[in-house]
Length: 467
Image (cartoon, rainbow, N blue to C red; front, side, top):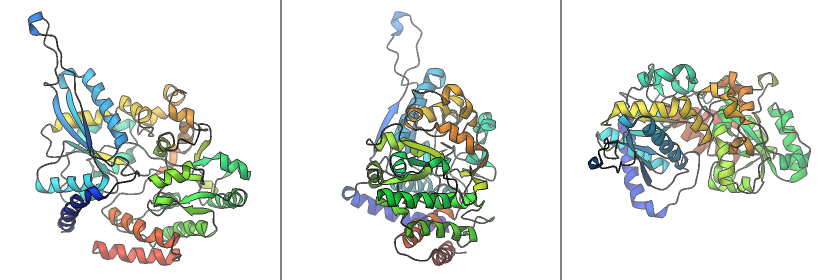
């Protein structure tokens, strides 16, 4: 019943989006960096050697199996195209003609939902954002069972990142990264205030350092986000807590949730953290504010590394440090959690599901694929054996290793034994909407007491989910 209601709403929303498509222009964010429709195709080039010359007939573009992939991230396109080219070189007998279509975040997910419901129009493969994923697993998933294709790589992959895109032990989505959450520190601001980021272990340390930063520079210690929940989730994970209970139901009024929200509010009220333009450090307005040197700390999953060279040209190499996130108890320093994510699926409408499943799992789970996930995308690879591969981790020609003060892999190896998971359940899309549309704006901008906001959020979530 819930899925039918959702689909009806999405169909209506899609009609409205079509009507107003010419009136809106998206802004980059963690979910919609690629905000224009575009597509490219990668296949094995045609062999122009004629049979009249007596040469053996080679694999041609016409021989390649066409596969279509939808994504909402422009940066993912280059990775998929790279892996298609490498696959075709190594497997000319199973070459693919890959077409990658980059679409706006909401449009793509809405189109996918409607295509799956109607039974036509879905691509062979599609990126699905982690908070949207549980919706597609309700009832009988319209995604292919990828378990057997995952099995050859399973022992080398962080299990939690496979589990988050699974149901009843079946793997339906393939992860892109671990997304270990870290703190990025702008030393040009901290040094002016006499703050050493390596001494920040707890949120109390962070607040004390932040007060010094504000007094000495007039700039914010950190960015208070109303449109993302990563800091809230990191604070929950550090308490070994979650947004949902053991049944997957909302737990927004738990003691841990109230403590996290209260801490976020206290930092804002003290002037240590200030609202980031656009509500997110991963929005166009946010990039501009960070690029202008307005925030000393950005707390985000490690994939945020790619945003610095891509969107913040005024921040030079050797200026940003990376460290584990602050925690409530110093004994827990080094705790992190896997934030954000994209699970790539093969839909049941694919005409070539076996080849799509084989290529996709090779592209995103193999050692070669994980190397390019790092080298092309700058994401922390799910194959953690690579975190200690010196050829990869000490390559000074890599833009991310050369850009930051701290080697990202040194930080990853510090936290790798305690990277926790915030469960992705049926309730998470509803919870995320309530947190970003109501709770965070209320406690950060409107002064609503954190406990009051948490209790109201729990009641709203329960009502909306019909519990």
